[in-house]
Image (cartoon, rainbow, N blue to C red; front, side, top):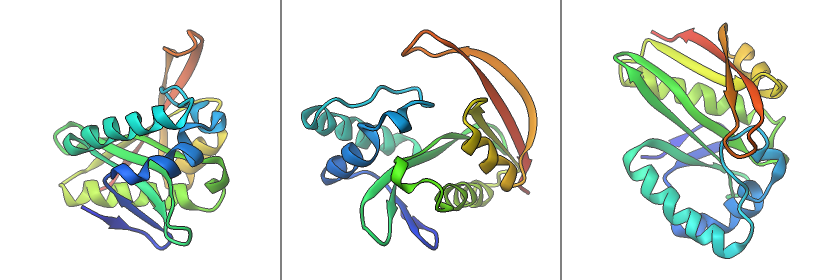
Length: 170
């Protein structure tokens, strides 16, 4: 399945995507900062990681994000069903050179449209409280703050606050 916005294409990972994902996303501390994954240290690790991504994406509603203009993989995005008619984001990540261009909003709106096509009626979006860009994205797309949870980052062991937002999408 391939999905498109004005500037982006979302599709399943292919092996040859390892290089642009490594340089644009996985090796970037700015991107990993708010995520639950570790940065990828080298090209060989990126080649292994793309294989894991391909296997994961076969079984999940998850895609790589490509910028149409550059034809590069610049991030990833996904959703998951949490109960009947209710979906949530399963992460949206973009490389640092690709933020601030409206791409996050295009991705989130596309994911919502996808969930509506599967009879989704509610959509939850979560972000770390300190991720101001992600919070601004949620608000710009009409999400309403619901509650916060205290979490522990499994990579660093540090505590953080996860904020959960909701939008009715039916």
